[in-house]
Amino acid sequence: MTMYVYVSVAQVAKVVGGVLLAYVAARIAMWLSSEELWMRIPSVSVPAELGEPPVKGRKFDLRAHERKQDLSVVKCWDPASLDDLGVVAVTTNVEELIARAGEAQAEWAASPWSQRRKLLRTLLKWCVAEQATIAKVAARDSGKTLTDAVFGEILVTCEKLQWLAANCESVLKTEFREPGTTVMFTKKVKVEYRPVGVVLAIVPWNYPFHNVLNPASAALAAGNAIVIKVSEYASWSTAYIGEGIRRCLAACGAPEDLVQFAHGFADVGSKLVKSPKVDKIIFVGSPQVGIKVMEAAAANLTPVVLELGGKDPFVVCGDVRKTELERIVQIALRGVFQSMGQNCAGPERFFVAKEVYEDFCAQVAEITKRMTLGASVVSSDSSSPVVVDCGAVTMGTPALRRLQDLVDDAVKKGATVLVGGDWSESSSSSSSKYPPSFYPPTILRDVPSSSAKIAQDEIFGPIMCIFEPCTSDDDAIARANDCAFALSSCAFAQDPRRASRVASQLKAGMSSVNDLEGTTYLSQSLPFGGLGFSGFDRFAGPEGLRGLCNVRSVCEDKFPTLLRTAIPGPIQYPCAATKKHKPHIFAQGIVQLFYGDGIIDKLRGIAKIISAS
Image (cartoon, rainbow, N blue to C red; front, side, top):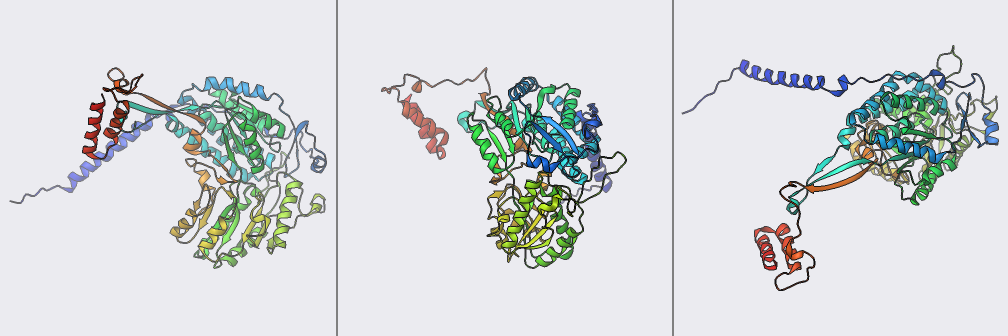
């Protein structure tokens, strides 16, 4: 007999509606009980005068400084406007800084997660509220444009702070794991992440704000203190940035000595690296200096994270259509000219398929010709920021000379200059078309990948280097991988599967598909780092956060009042073999019982245990 069950649409709708209503009610309840909703986040402000030149209108004599440097103080200036930003004292009390940080860390290590999250959200609130001033401070100290400062300094810092606040506890809380095979069935095991102590970060000048907040926020989230050695080319901004951090710490009841700044030159960095009281080192800079940092840290076996720059490949496949190529061109230009190309992770080697090569070169050249150079932060109170495309090269004449040498060598080897590439020493004169510290946005095409210095040397400047046309995807991949650096990479194609296939074969620590490689850094859940001359280890993501901790393995009894480990009689000391006890046979039986293949093998193991007992 057939039975039929009739269910009306109204009944189904009622059940589904009830489930949805319960789900919504649960989500509302979770939201109402969330810490983020009820936690009062302090508002912090920093005196605006800390972000202004000490004497308005006073200009810095860059050429005189380059002819004869005074190493008794750190002289500061705006590379774009040449406003004199004053001087910063060279740090002499290195061990005192580390000691103060260590004392503060001993207290902070026991801080609850709620306090750490509050601090991170306070820093985030300050970044958002004072982003206009922070951008001006970063732009003045590095010479970049305000747009580059907001886009490259503040946006990524806010993303990092938000990710840390949301995830630091879940990433670093005690993690229980499987005890393993049945031989450990009476045990429970866990991993604890405990702060390392005092972290030393030696950071470069290209991102004065983010390069401080990036290691500082992660170190604080993990329960550490940090000493930050900033570059002599980006020391002025630490007065404003440091005061902001100090006020955020105070507002959250955290020790104000948790973050310390060191200023000066190579000798100051060397003293910090050699200190036995430093527990971990993060170094961001050149491979040459990175090697010296490793050598100095080896004396105390201090662990080191090295981020040493890159020459990221940017691959464009031959199937891209006109509208897609227009999108790619704008992404390529932003990647090259963001912060005037002074980025560790930025496209420096362009491998473009022959099918779209001419169109790509024509489009990037046409846009680049219309780009403007200049200072976007002016010292006059009555003047609004100036909208320009490109700022200055931070390190002055030596860097400009190095960039021009790379261009000249490429041209000698067969490259063609489409735009720019015509800086000369006369740029220091008032008659030059380029102000001091500015290098023209430059496009090179047909660069030989085998002989030109620019093919292997890190550019770190506003030069788009387009290599000779690629005959196939395999050709592009082979040439892209022929480099000692391997930080990041990206590949573009009309077919996303093709782009993904190319990107997966690029030798790099990171890769993006149909987008700029910097997107991997904007996603703070991902680790950041490279291979080869780009360094090793990682910061950002769970891996970077756990890297700031001592990883501690713990094993304990699952039922401590009932079962505890006891050494079986046959293998107790002294365990010399007797007619009754055969310790090696007993041990073989244990192995066979737990790891034998099948029930018969395991029964034989039991027999051995019995015979040896």
